[in-house]
Image (cartoon, rainbow, N blue to C red; front, side, top):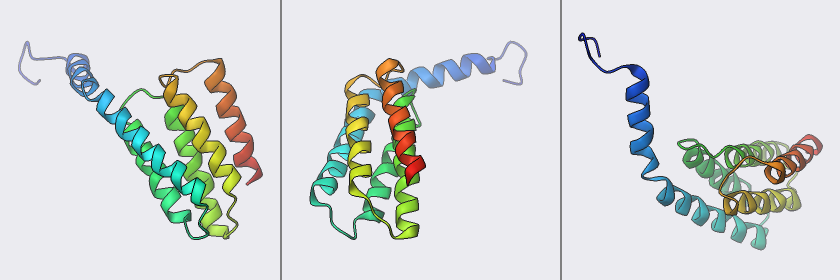
Length: 132
């Protein structure tokens, strides 16, 4: 880069993004698997599952953060936020977690695209987060 005629930062960034994009399908499959574990946790509704829910949501945030997943990242981050607050206050509310899991599944099935549907889902999650 420092040599005359070297690569520009924009070119390096574009090449890095293209190399990362090759792994998108595998990463989204991992997100789907993690989401399946979250759905299982919701079905069990164990009273001590709060840290597990946070860990699963955090894993989704970690994977989604490498790609342009817009609403998926936002929904998973919202779940991290509400689960952390529920753990701290010891006031667990499984329906809030279930709604987040369903929203995540719908956003993932929709290709993580930003649009009217994902906007409505994120607005609903925001209202849940404000109530918690």
